[in-house]
Image (cartoon, rainbow, N blue to C red; front, top):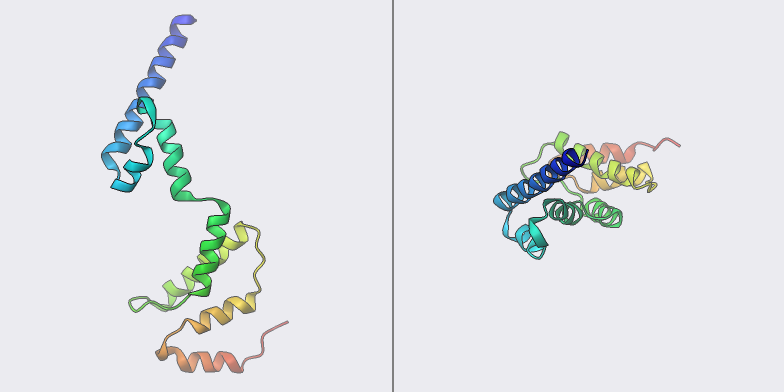
Length: 132
């Protein structure tokens, strides 16, 4: 039993170093600086640091979603489908974070972000009465 456990432990240590090597070979400068002080080529520790940094906290995600919603507008090279999918992504992020969002507010933000070619569409939407 001791020999097998030792082999498993050695394999885990080797795998950990392999993860570290793969990370180092594929990272940008910022990522490299984030993990430069991790001792012993610890791939697992590096992965956790990078994951935490790039995924962010729940509060970071909520803040980013609200900021994106407030500044929501149609990009110059973006179609209406992509525009609405981005809005849906923001909505999904807020729902996942258990933040209630008034559907009418989302509609207003979507209308406000549309460019001039969609003015007639926005005017028609403005004449419709929202459902209660």
